[in-house]
Image (cartoon, rainbow, N blue to C red; front, side, top):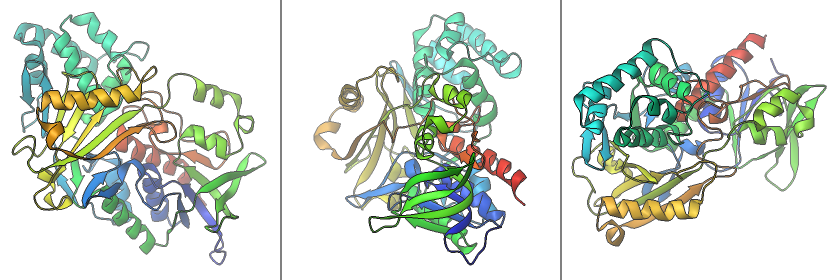
Length: 444
């Protein structure tokens, strides 16, 4: 335990108040630790926050947030007694292909229906579905091939591949030819089945603030607008962090554990560079693909593009435009009266070799092609390209780094170190669960 009389000494310092940082902070706070959360911006949540745009509550990234009892997010909220003020939208999914739309049945069991709708041939659909069931219940493919290559073994039907291309791009952030086959089936097997999803009634920022308030009631401290300048390492162990003091200077904060939610690459930079780390860790960090970019478009209309649709729409009929939601139809209070907020996402066709300017332009063209007249009537609030230090994901699904590092007391959380079979906000919270468990084993 730290000396509670020292205002700059903590058991744990968390760098970054994204979903991973917030969830690990909640778990450590619940264990009785003295916790400090640093956030360089004035807002909580990272990719699970929101901003006000013309009085509309616009997400910074996440739309569907896991909320079921098995969710690592729910566990973190429960650990500190925080409420999750959500609208349950589980199962409200519609898929669009070139030949039409398919609504997921509300009672579940829609996977075969999706495949049959895409293939337009029940015998072919049954055969492919049997291969998928075998991969879920028996031999799970390994990660040496992509899920596109796995499908290529069993079908030449391009529409079913377009269906799963939209699914992968919308839910996993990368394309069918980029998702490892094993990771795809791990996600289907362990994460998607039985999951529940919701949208935060007051926006994701309000959800994160509720979690922060619950932690503060238990003694956790938050310093927003205070960036981390460096992680202090002595003799192979963290001893604290250097942070901005808010007046142009720096101050040191002592800590036994430092948990970074900035992405593994940035963590290495903050801790002093590659030379501080054991070689195999750096080689794994550099091997394989890393950050995945994403395109975010939000706009308002005086009518909803789709009447009475309080769910999520995934597109398999486009090159870049992959996802649409009308948040106002789910939680009307997030928009002014008479306005309907719409949020769309796009992705490059290749997450390694891409032109995001063109991908954004084509996402807008495909929005118009799917919903003629939109461009003339919409008021655009956000047309963003998330990449670089603030990407859609810090590492591709299936390529997560470990939560612990060779430096004792230094951990990573977030989608850059997602446990196998997890994606998005749930992967960030699951990484927090793993990191907290390792720290708990050391905590005396």
